[in-house]
Length: 126
Ligand code: SF4
Ligand code: SF4
Image (cartoon, rainbow, N blue to C red; front, side, top):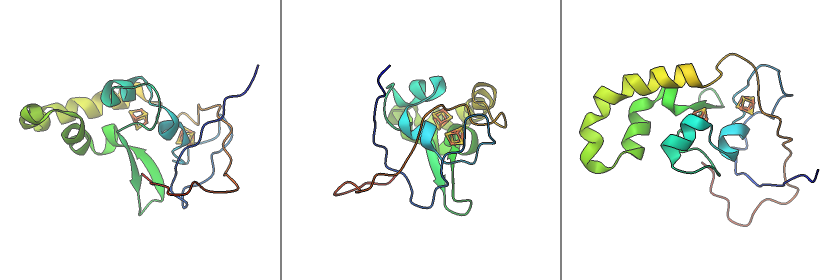
């Protein structure tokens, strides 16, 4: 089977992706590559970085914003007329994220991630 190559833009301070099954280190590779089922709902697409993934400077880790920053994520994804509902919807989104994403269960991504030798000309890091 042929391998598919895909370039993702990632914070230079992010940790390298660990082996599949090892503890998650917040490297962000999975969420920057394509959204999980919850991320598909939030992002409205199946490819590319999830709209909910957030870089945490102090931890130097990517986090699922649906879980850690549901208000911010909903402000970003909902159309303006619906944003007044954000305070009511945010706790539900966080609960859904807690159930749907595999927090604390180790890295479930089988992606082989390695840095490019030459970075893209004008990177836009999320
Ligand atoms: S699940 Fe794996 S690829 Fe995704 S952030 Fe955690 S360590 Fe990185
Ligand atoms: S775990 Fe969260 S940030 Fe990652 S793809 Fe799923 S919804 Fe998006």
